[in-house]
Length: 161
Image 1 (cartoon, rainbow, N blue to C red):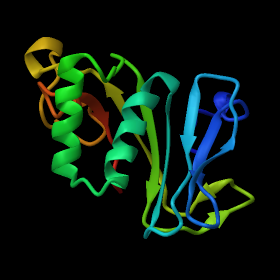
Image 2 (cartoon, rainbow, N blue to C red):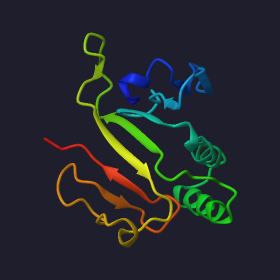
Image 3 (spheres, one colour):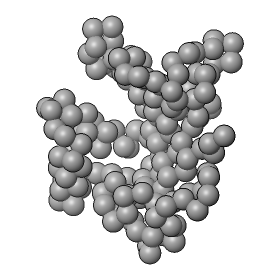
Image 4 (cartoon, rainbow, N blue to C red):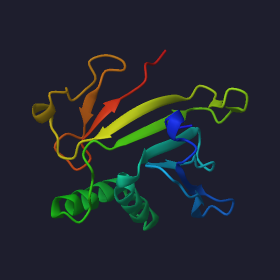
């Protein structure tokens, strides 16, 4: 559900099996990787990202599995990106389908109350380098988050009703 509709059938799907182990659930044939919702967590959160982001995403999963804190993960990936050992492609996208409920409607194919948020990675970009503000001007307006860092990205959040 997080993947663009045209790319869903060919997306690689990764996530957790019934034993809680991180596994590949389906191999893919296109540029998308979908990370399914972790049913052990509250609410719903499924993501889809371009396959070129996998080294960055996998490194984050690896560091969290080692027990690293969010600040440690950020600092370690920042250092690796600056050293050139962790590639983060400019312009690669992340689609996040999220919401407070896990109620899935098989007729609509949607999760109750879920919305899409979009992220476009722009490593080390700043407001000065791309012209976007560092906070949203209004609902659904793009802005740059984590400017000047390896995790700099254009954020486009859904309109809250």
